[in-house]
Length: 413
Image (cartoon, rainbow, N blue to C red):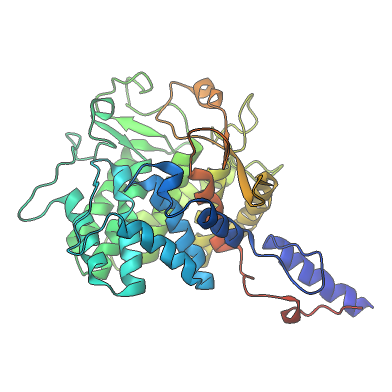
């Protein structure tokens, strides 16, 4: 009986840490990541753009990137087809792309091109990745049309609102793609261009007191949200630091360790991890809309960024960039997130307490006054960020996708 109780307890602990519950002795429901990916594919046909209507943009590709992570675990061909169907709506046979945007958000689909080239070997995806690289950095025959600040940072968007404004979000949208592209196709200059941007933005936006990143930075120091001396935004928005953390750990996954900037990027990531650790609410394991103020009035758990933090910390441990204690933080975060995953009317998962998209705000109250939303919902405008947070976290926290009870050492009466 003691042996039975011990083994049953261990198995139960393992299953609960992977968010798998079961109500019978014959089957285990799908892990959360698989449930979310399956629901997305069922809800948004023929492609993810049915959710966002944003075209060749990060709001679509971040979801597909999360599904990609789950696909690498379960190899469900339906997932690959779904990603491919989206890409094929925009990518032509010669690798040209319809609907290119001159925003950094529009650069993120480049990771979809790299993924599909690796999975299918079809040359049009390699050419499409090259198109994306050249679109941002320019080529021998066509210069880049992306604007930069006088000191070399890319504007987040090429419009008057973002003139000389650099956002931490933009690092995730372009630089992991550029580093992977440079490594895959032996282009050191492409790698160096990405790292130059990361280090420049960190110098402008990283707060050495909190080890967290400010949302954005203005070269002109003229926007109402910008500090008149430093040009920095005045708050640590959680999703900005979430994008930043994922960007750094994904870059370090691919960046050669003998690169001259490897130690700098590692140091930056480890400092950010310290800030993320300090910002976690110990009561529920979550990270909040304003990151360093979880105990302040009106602040709320922000599930998209919580998933990003979980992903970034757990992956850092796996890559031996962080000590194992950070896995405990990731596990607490993953468990806390699941209290905000509800059942929607269609029977699939609904992600709640997610901040909608937003630019830099004027102060703390302005951030918390923007109330959280859910996905899916009955609202006319839908935001995909909740999906990406859960999918990315699940991809590193769930490891039992293929288990049924016969694989577990549980003694059944």
